[in-house]
Structure formats: C-alpha cells, structure tokens
Image (cartoon, rainbow over all chains, first blue to last red; front, top):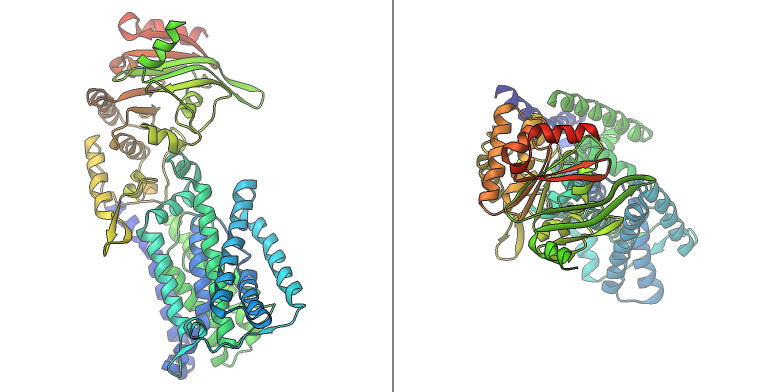
Length: 320
Length: 253
C-alpha cells in the first residue's frame, strides 16, 4: 500500500520537476538581471516562445502516439509561403489564401502519416525526407527570395497582430492551442487512443483501435499547427522568408522532452510541454539579458535538455 | 451435405477447415473448431500446437490462409479486431493485453471510451463513469486493486491479468476467449477466475478457455478440443473422458 502511494507520487513528480525547473530558471535570470521579471520582458519572452509553443503542443501529441515529425519547420515555411504567393502574386482574397495554406498543411501531414503507416517505416525517416522535400518546394517556388504580404484585412490582425499597442495575439493562440491539445489528450476518447497507440500498439490494435487512423490524424493535426504558427509569424512580420522555421523541428522535440514527454511514446503531458516551451523562451531571452553571446543559446538549451532527460530517466526508474 | 450446414447454424462459432502459415511454417492445418452458445470449451495442447494462432484468427488479428468462419449462423470475415469486438467477441490475449503507461480504467475502456457532452455539444471523456465502471468490473471478478486510477505498470502479473479479464467480461459479449488467463495468478486468484467463467456461462456467454492446466479445464469445461502441431487431434466431451486420457493424448503426439 505505502509503496504504491509512493510510486504514484513519483509519477506526478515528473510534471512537478519541470515546474520547479521553470521557476528556478526564472529566479536565476531575475537575480542576474532585475529586468528579467519586468512585465514587458515577460511579454517578449512568452511572445518569442509562442510560435514554437503552438508547434510543440502538436509535436507532443504525436510523440505520445509514438511518432516524430521533423518536417514541421518546413511546413511552417511552406504553408504561409503559398498563402503569401496566392495573395501577393495572384490577388487571391486573403481569407482564401489563408485557407488554402492551412488545407495544404493537412495534405502535407497526411502524406507524412500515410507513408509512415502504410510503408511501415520509422516516421523519423519519413519526415526527415519530407522535411527536405517540403523545404525544397519552398525554395523552388520563390527562387530563394522572401515574399511580402501586406494585408490590412481583419484576418491578418486576428492571426498575427497585437491587442492594443503591445499585447501580441500570438500569445492567445499559444494558450488556445495548448488548451485544445490538453483537451484532446486528457479529455477525449481520441486522446486515450493516442496514448494507447503510442504506449503499446499491439494491445491498442487488439482492443479494436485503428492505430493507422489515429496516427494519420495526429500527423495532420501537427502539420496544421505548424502552418498556423507560420501564419502567425508571417502576419506579424509582413513577409515570409523561405528559410523560416529551420531548426524548429528539433527545438519543438526538445521543449516537449524537457516537459517530460517520452521518446518512446505513450507518455507526455501538454502542461509539461508548455513549461518546456517557456524554458526554451527564457533561455533565449535570458542569455541576451545576461550579456552572454547569443551563440550560446542553443548550447544552453542542449545542456538543459540532457539534464532534463537524465532526471526523467532517474524518476521513471524509481517508478518501477 | 446437410450436416455441415446444421453445424454452421447450431454453433455460436463454427470454424471450417482453417489453415494458417507463417512463412513456410504451417501453424494450422485444416482445423475444424466449434463452440455452442453457453458452452465452455477448453482448448488444450502443447506449446506451439496452434492454440493462440487459432484464437487470433477468431478475434480478427490474423486472416486465415484457408477456411471459413461462421459466427451466430452467419459467415463472417473479420478484417480487424474491431470487427470481432463489434460482432460480440471479447479476447484476453496472453501476450498483448494492456498498455503499461495507461491507468487501469483507461485500459478497460480503451477503444470504446464512454463520452458525455459538455454544454450540449463538446464531446468529453466520461471519466467518472470509466472509474466507477472499472471498479465494478474488477469487483465483479473479485479482484481488489488499490485504485483504478493507478497505471498498469505498477501492478503484479496476476493483477494485470485480472484487469485484462475485467475488460473482456465487462461488455457482456456473446463469446469470451481467454488465452492462459491464470498463468500469472495465485491459487486464490485462479479459483476466482474459474468461478467467473462458470458465471459467464450462466449469464449467457460462451467461453473458450486456453490452458496448460488440464485439471483447471476439467473443473469447469463442457468439452475440450486438443490441438497438436497445428492439427486437431481430438474433440471430447468432458463427461466422456478423463484427465489421464487427455494427458496421454497430448503427450503421445
């Protein structure tokens, strides 16, 4: 009895650990630079994390389902690029251009899922391939040049504008998609099927779950989020560059893993991922405030990633 | 020609001339298997006899290479376990039972999660129902766990089997297939599971009981089918045979 209670506790410790790490990092940075906790700087930090956070929410669902998507960074560029080309070069109304971009993302996600499940190859390979292919398509489409998208339409403000002078809508979208992903994973039948599929595919199939369908839908969801995050950036900056989003695929996985998501499928929490995203945002911002060379940014993130996985492995070993 | 048709209708399950290969290895060779409504049939035989392969075909996991299956008088063609479950066949598999990282109640309802609507249109997992019904399902088979909200990884082998059996028996299936349900269980737990199978028969289910333990099979089954090297070698009524005879048949093949 006592042993069982303890085991349950350590199960929750995994999520608690990330929260403590987030707070510790915030305290550390605020001691080093008192501006860190100023409302404006916090806003900047969260805003910088938002686009990655939208993607990471989807990436977590996919990892819980037992798959990876390395093509999210390319989709992040390709979908808004198509939107921008349709709008700027072909005078397609902005609302349709946006819809085409998002629908394209669903197709890209379907391709990832279809190849992975039907050919039975690791999604790591499928999406490494499509990452290169989707990126090549972006570069070919625009010949390597950025495309401007200057729209006064309401939709551009809704997706990538600001509320008042300062508050970026991106933060609201980040919270919205975190909420949606949390709802899916914790409170829907589909979420249970995702967890079963990633936790033990054979058992899930024997229980009557169509794991192929579960995976393909989740791949499509991730692509949709990647495209949406790309649109947020595109409307915020008023242009799309063909190399946008490079490295996002690994940063999203890193944020998810820092948040406690298992690399082997079956386990992960959206709350953990949201905190993992905040940690990556704080590192990017904190490094600048500390006056450390920005070249250290990813190095610092890497060190935290390794530490997080060591701690999580230690906790789950004790769990057994 | 009248006889086979009668067999198709009279039986709950009638498997006709089932063959299955894995590469060049013949796992099942022209096997006939039947079970009537409200019957407990023991499926016995040595390791590698083809027992698990036969029930995996019946539960929709494998398609047969040859042969026809009748269920409830109708010819069926399961393309996935979902088809078998929808038809009313529940299975506890020996090797692929549960998801370790999922809580007990989520395991029991995996694939058929109960839903409710939030503010009239948002589908929402009915966790209260899952937890409550999972507790009932385990209570029903007489197994006590600390909390159904604990993940399966933390359970003992016998407890895991109980959860798996709880799932198979909760949904009031026409046919419950149990592949070595008591392998990891204590004597006390085993007794409860044997009693459970008798109760299933009383409430209208048929049960296929796969076991290495001839004594367990004899204590509850109506009939037993013996497989050896992928072939059916005997089909005996329990009332017309003895444990010694069955052991001799299995060992001499």
